[in-house]
Length: 353
Image 1 (cartoon, helix red, strand yellow):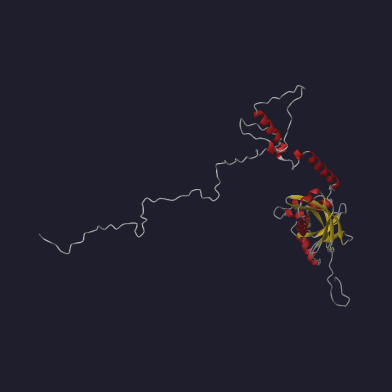
Image 2 (cartoon, one colour):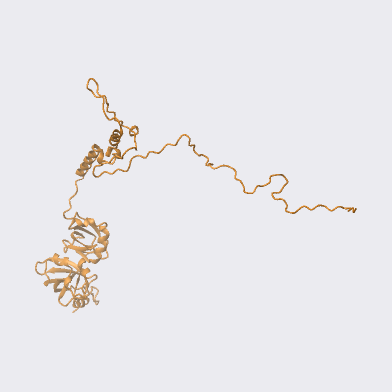
């Protein structure tokens, strides 16, 4: 009748009792559209009926509620939390990865019982594909994903969704180690270690160094494929100028000696400044190999003539201006004379004959 007494006599002690029931398991995708939550597929929590909540409250189960799920067909087990109590009576809805871990089909009988797990301190995981390496910050992604999990169990292959991509991750090791091989990941500092993804091959760094050295040596032997080769060498600019100069010459023949040897000596100047560039005549066609560009011939600045003097002080226009109205420059005279007419003075004495 009573759950227990304490050793000091008279007081009742609330001893948590274990919840254990059998349910028909179904994936989350088979839930009713009105209550289905597709995000639950990428977490570690299940859906139970409301009657399970009533029994759990009467049994005084500890929080957070953690459950051990055991397949009745093959005996496989895993752990998880509960998301909501909205499933139909006698049914339990599980994420797809949990169905695959347990190896059960929709409608299989599943035993679900309450359990206690220690707080996790360390977990080692292994991505199941090399595509996981494409994530720029996997630590931040896992911190966000593990919020949807209540527990982790060894040999579980969980699924996470990131940027519309599905990644599968296997739990290799957990600490502290227990008989149930599971830990609680709620409100705990969890150290995470990564194992190399499945199919990952460590690159041979020595072979890469040898290939890089061979590539550099090849570039040194062929200046046309190396960045230090000048544009004039790539298009044979010196040969184009020499051919153009020979085509403009009036006398292209060669002299002959009595001995039969040619009198013309092949003098090829190494300095481009020694070649004469002429702009007379028809322009020579420039044919370049495929994949090469030419950005023009060197600019020849015209020299100034001998009679032209450089205007150093900038005073090219000098002189004195003239006014349309001539002004009088005599001292003491104003520029404009008085316009008043001079009148003769009247005599003091008038004589009449």
